[in-house]
View 1 (tube, rainbow, N blue to C red):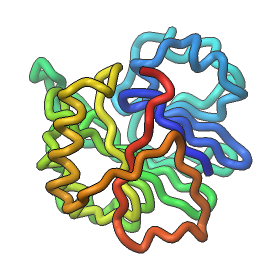
View 2 (cartoon, helix red, strand yellow):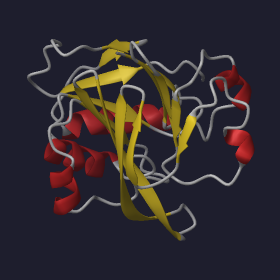
View 3 (cartoon, rainbow, N blue to C red):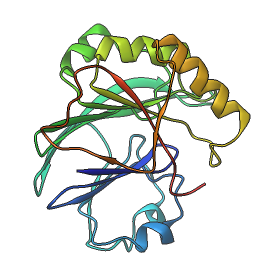
Length: 213
């Protein structure tokens, strides 16, 4: 499997049989349209804007909420978490557990609160955790570290919603997050390639460079 970070909460997961995009809410539609045939697209917060996914190559399956889904070689489970929008309006944020090629990937979406112990128990044995850290519209770096330690994933990939991740706010959040989880150095990569035999015995902090700044 190959993982690329587009920007914000959007990642591209490429397996031997499928291509999945996670929450492309902040990605221009033409960028997705330039991709190869897309198998599925997930949205953590349901979108009413059909332009977010109309005309995508491959007529992908659109997933916008809790439930169980199986598309091609990918199994997806959505778990609803009560959350709040930036303007303090109650909403449902769907956490996605994505299983494929012997790997388990968890995307926490637009998380603004710490999940309950019950939710954490339902999401055990995670290989890769996508977690927001910006502390503005989502959880703070300290809260993100607490969640990461609770999940104990093999790898954690921070995400934030600024379109340009070279700004000071993001770097400050990244430094704070790494400190709280006890990591002194970032493993920066342009992409992450994984397989079942990948050695991830300890939680590693992976910082992906965005394909879109």
